[in-house]
Length: 202
Image (cartoon, rainbow, N blue to C red):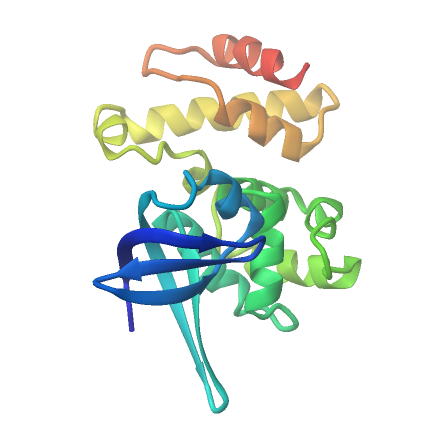
């Protein structure tokens, strides 16, 4: 129903905010990470929203980025993961960190979310492993930087660096996160990417 709302934050709790838009206050359920990222009461913010309509309720779920919203929509397609579970997972990890965990089969990382057991975490990995990609997780989120790079060359270098880190004994999750933080250009060699990534592991 609503793609996003822009307004002033009137109230914040650990899992909810009240956003005033044109003199109407909207209750929006949010993750702990979102709460921590907000500027505080009185600040102006744009919140991407997911609307859940049931027979006995009408609820809004909010996110600071479209990327978080999109991964949330994928999460709630998993059997046993409702909106509450989706927010719980996104309270302990970003959208990209979740992608890394799914691609690496890291159920332990996902099961750290409140109310998410090992079996449920494994189900998340099983159901979503074909719906997320390494390129999606590693891609810059800034459209201008995406346009300035040769995607195929950049991603090949990233993939090779990740494979090298895993071969050195690091977990796939750690390798993915480290390479994600490296600034890479078309001229970057795999060795340069690898050296830079190692700094983020230690």
